[in-house]
Every structure is written in structure tokens, then in C-alpha cells.
Length: 291
Image (tube, rainbow, N blue to C red; front, side, top):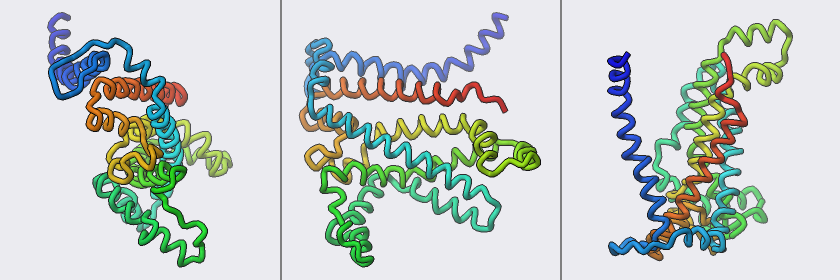
């Protein structure tokens, strides 16, 4: 038994060491750093305790960034989840264009986020952007906007780009989940006279719950840590209208050189993601699904 346990630890130890190096140690260091007033330029680490967390609670820019992040994340999660599931079901049908559809939907995921950001900056340009030109050509001039320049539109315009760029990747997860469902169940449902909606509701969806849980966790994490799109498209503007927690951290650290304060906001972000992801898995009860 001891020899067997030793063998098990031999296989577990490398992964445990890597996990400690790349997660536990950085997380612990960040927590300690958030309790200091380090400026990132010197070796002075003045202990301030929980002061940064109290300041975050009263910081209007942090509050704005948190509010924007919630709007951004909800928009991305709802649309990306729904569209990815719809497209996954669509391409699962046996047609000659399946490979073409999968390639088209997946293509944006292989392009860097910064490149996507610059492309969509031109699309959204109020003067020469293709979106406004299209609206004008259709006689919908009243709908033309400064999509990244209006405070109430900027965050949603970027959210659209976010789920446009990642929908194909999420679709692949759903396709894998759909392919794992036994076809016999659909045959039984068809024999019993179940409609397509009832087959989806009582067969597809319950068995797709593990994949749905992964998708929700993935999209939540991606939306909360989205950074490159916003930095490349608006840099958090106009007037902090598209500032989210990740860009708030960046600006605090590299614009104001308040690394301790920035790290405190990073700790808050990590806790938010952990709590939201935990409740998502609890809600879907992915671990209780039986095939």
C-alpha cells in the first residue's frame, strides 16, 4: 500500500509543483502585495493593511468599472451562450456545408484580440466606418452613431465584438457536448411522439448541462478579464464609460504607479470570478448529470 501511495504521489507531485508555482504562489504574493503601498519602482513595501480595500469601496472610478464589467459580462454571457448553442445545433445537421460553416464561425478565434479590436475600430468609425455607411445606404441615417464615442453605447459595442470573436470557440464546446449524447435517446423520444422542442428540453438540455457549465464558466472568466479589446479600442473611454476591472488595474499600476492598489482590485476581481463561477456550477448541477 505504501509503495502504491508513493507511486501515486510521484505522478501527482509534478502537477502540484506547477500548480503551486503558477497559481498558489502568485495568488499569495498578490494578496500580500495588496496590503502594501508598493509603487512598482522601488523596493519599499510600506504596510497599509486593508486600507486599499476600503479605498476601493469609496472609489467612484472603481465603482464605475465594476458596474461596466457587470453590464459587459451579462451581455457577452447571454448572447454568446445563446448564439453558440444555436450555431452548434445548426452545424450538427448533416449537410455538405457543415465544414464551411464551422470554419467561418471558428475563424475569428484564431485572430488576435488586438487585431480584431483595430478592425472593429474602423467598422465603428462614425465617419468612414462600414457600419454607419451601411445604415446610411439603407436610409437608416437616424440609427448611425458614434458607437465608441457615446458613453451609453461604448461598453455594449465592445461587448458585441467580444462575443463575435469567441462564439466559434464556445460553439466547439457545445458541439462536443451534443456529439456525446446517445442518438438512441432521440429515437426513443421520436417514437414516443415528442416534438423537437420537447426532445431538446427533456433530452438535449439535461445531458448538455456539463458543457453548459463549462461554457458559462469560460465566458464569465473571459468577460471579466477582457483587456486587450478595450485597451485597443477605447482605452477605457470616453470618460471611463468602457473602463472595466482589468483596465482599471492596468491604469492604476502603469499610469499612477499604485501597484498595491491595483493588486487589491485584482484580488477583488479574482474573488468575484470564483464566487460567480461557483454558483454557476451549483445552478446547473453539472456534477449530478447521469448519462
